[in-house]
Image (tube, helix red, strand yellow):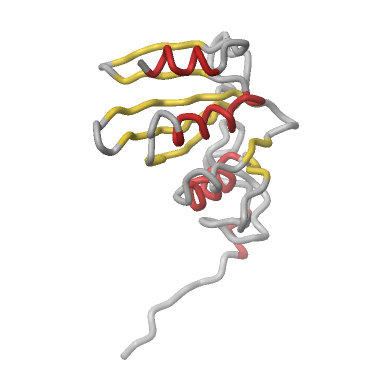
Length: 163
């Protein structure tokens, strides 16, 4: 039903579908992402964004795109799940925010920026969540060195007050 409803609504858009353990995955072009997310929420009743993350395919053999941004949706009443993926490349790591669809996207998008550098255009409070504002790298990218680039020397030291 999900496949047919999406195919009917987005007849001119080509989607790639797959399924694993009864969970459907659809790959959508980045320029149609927001429309599909909105349709899934309002028409298909996927009322919860359970997670949002990215994958760096820098070292993936035969990969044609570097970054995959993945949205995990849940229809709470029935328990149906849907995974929506889109691919983006440098230097244009920009996607529309989903905070105007699910308020829970707020921290998830900020975390995705912190770790991978994906910018979510239109986000209401777009600033670093996990790392200091002045941190200039994205630690979950495959080209980020395991020991870091020496930027941790200026992290503030937080101690517990004796009492």
